[in-house]
Length: 320
Ligand code: CP
Image (cartoon, rainbow, N blue to C red):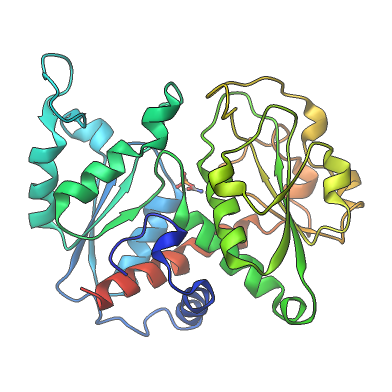
């Protein structure tokens, strides 16, 4: 694996999932693979799970991980080619990234969308500029449009909770929009849709209010329903996530609390397991009764972030 930006960098999803589960059973199986290698974890936005799980994963492989909060500790970076840098940016990515490539064997980057300009965000300028200029493999820790380490984790978590069912019949997985107090990126939803479609082991339904369509580039293949109760019928997994509007970009149109998942709605499902990438706004996006109840997978899911990151770093180290 030369980079990890989306599902398109993975040749065999099930093999990568198996590798992650192998590391879960034996975290130090490849403890020498990353010896004398260094990964730089660059954050332009906050993180709890991604930052710490990737550090742990690198450590399990014997790699040194150095975290740099670019947004708080670094010079303000310019990403536009040909920019006249007379404003607030101090250092161009074409100067900074090659230096980072000298310090690190692998670079991992988190950068959120602006939610102000769809074309800019969906061009993935920031992460693409790192790829262009760093000269070392780049791993996405969440980009403007996708969150592949989260999605790999999600597939791992579904796989380990339903091995026999996958063999016997197709799963039904529902991605449902949920209310939130502020506009959030589409990354997690886009990425989950892209991975579940590529995985191909489930009937995949996306439920959201009118006008919350996601980009077809990621959802194509899923059934889209605007009635949440109808979508939830016989679901085996319900993935809950808010996202802001895609077409009229980055807005909140409605925040109907009826879209928050409750135990009553869970009765419509096939006793579905409930997933969320976290952080979650309790009793806005998801009810306490679900998050603290027996159907919630959120802690297991977040724990699996380590094994997803370890499997990806292992693949990258082996191909270096
Ligand atoms: N799910 C996730 O990416 O969490 P963090 O933002 O805390 O890394």
